[in-house]
Length: 348
Image (cartoon, rainbow, N blue to C red):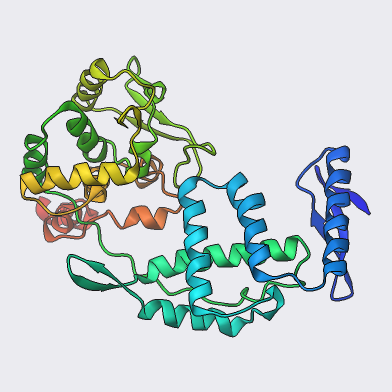
């Protein structure tokens, strides 16, 4: 049974004996009918085959959802989350998964470690939270495809994350970093962080068509093949030295991607390796994100309105942008001088 609700058709199904309208995600009647017939066919196959094995559902999820609606990085995260789940939680069928398994997963993953420079490093809670998002999505698709009546992990809570304060480079550190660059590739890569606040993934996904050298604007698109973090188009302005670095690098480039390696698009991992070499030569600490912190901190503390900084940063929430407002004594004293009471007292 189909019903047009707003601009999208909905299909009526039964969950726990109650009728529920599920969206077909289309306003085309023929596509909606195809969606409903496929749903009914899947439901009938499930009834005839019995319980849905967890492994089979994961294969279906990766093939029909993750591979068609997510970028490679997110697909890999889904795959790793399934691997870790299978290592810590033993289930055969989808309907065996319970809310308690979510807590078990959190506890056991938090006890996991990985080796870095001969040291055991615990898994970060933020990493576990991203894995929980993947696993919840897998179970949500099970409900949508009518393999389950309800998501058993809907009530499983993620770890509370405490965001650290931004740690921008000083002017001296930024100059040292640029001085340590060996070629135009490295200079542009670093300036895109310091002067434009680009994330490492955004740098890796840049094409020369994103640059407008007449208006001095970089326009980062969001698509299935190269998605921004917030999945929105992001626009930033180029400083004179960033524009010059881009033009110089473009003159030596012969591909569509701004950063290439061995004739192909450079990966995020490759850019991280190059940056680590540069900062090693410059003897400064911090990854790609410190360049972004520098750019946003300079904007936020330079009198630029916070909503403008938010747009330049590509932040979904303004509370994230507010972290870049420093509350050091010099800035607080300068802000106090702007108060009417202060001005009246000085006038006396």
